[in-house]
Image (cartoon, rainbow, N blue to C red; front, side, top):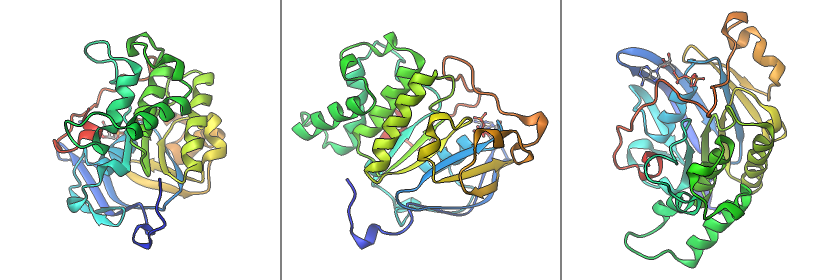
Length: 275
Ligand SMILES: Nc1ncnc2c1ncn2[C@@H]1O[C@H](COP(=O)(O)OP(=O)(O)OP(=O)(O)O)[C@@H](O)[C@H]1O
């Protein structure tokens, strides 16, 4: 999946002085963030601190109002290699509309790899089957996604991202409202990605079974990076770093989350994140 080409040896994400304003209100303020190839980063912080906005900015769903962003060494404005990114949004959307099978949702993750109007290749089929296996849902391939639990649903979305064989995967609270067995299945899927050398940015409120995977923790506070360093534990979440005793996080309620600030994509030409 990864090449040893020296041209791809630099940081996967390089954000400099990045600011984002929503309706004129600053939501991200002067962020500097470099993520190197193969790092597994936990992005943490109190509710409303800007984690989702940062992830959306990194995928192009939210434009920067100031600063520069490079992905894989390419200026964001010139970046076209969307197949190198996988994105699992906060809000589960796989079941919207007509009942779609698990296999179809995962297959949609191959869209940016395929040339239009071509039948799926053997490589496509192998990638789809492999992604379902990684998340432990091979036996559910023909089931309608509407029949799945919230945790299984999240695993389908992760399989969709995996099917595109991304080098960088961004996941926005995949474990929120998910029971422990499903969290463990998610952790196993992410461990496979990590072994393959992928770079992972994981927004999370609780670390739980992800703990052994995490190389680096970033804590957001009021749209800025309050901490960037060694991995934290779930106990650290109650420290002032996270906004003090009155600003504890709460996991989003079942099913998974129904986030009030869901945004639609202002970037039409971005099939991997807009479906
Ligand atoms: N579409 C939007 N319209 C208005 N305000 C928004 C929008 N999206 C985000 N915000 C605001 O930006 C700030 C950061 O929100 P964001 O969702 O990025 O935080 P978060 O750290 O991901 O929070 P959570 O843990 O609750 O998901 C919040 O104050 C939020 O209200």
